[in-house]
Length: 168
Image: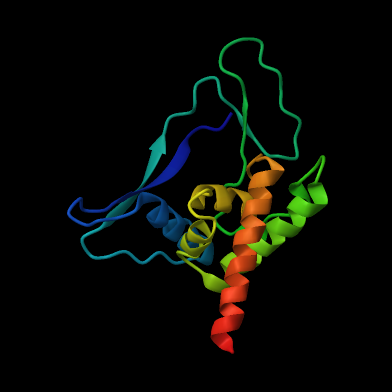
């Protein structure tokens, strides 16, 4: 088990209207790029928390231990901010190839459109998908029914058609 868990705590004044998910994505993507820029009234600090009691974090490549008692062990999934860093081979089982194709398209869309890029996809899905679901799909970190994956593909198709029409 590790000795301590380091976390980054970012405080944003409550007067500002901030969408927490968008802020989280911005912070994760900025840290992945190596630089985090905040407004002067925001603050951040690194905290060390004591070890998680009875919980062990292991990589996705290792087999999970079976605990004798107490809380079950957990597996770290999708912790990176950049879906492009994941392996598109994460999808397994029925429809795995279709999911990998959609995963690749989502990662490419995110890379091309940057921060806030999930909002148009959510809108194109008529709100049936959330930005968290889309991020998880692109990162290969969620298990969703194939209907959700196909909905994401249709939303991307719609956005691509709109982009082509606008460029003509």
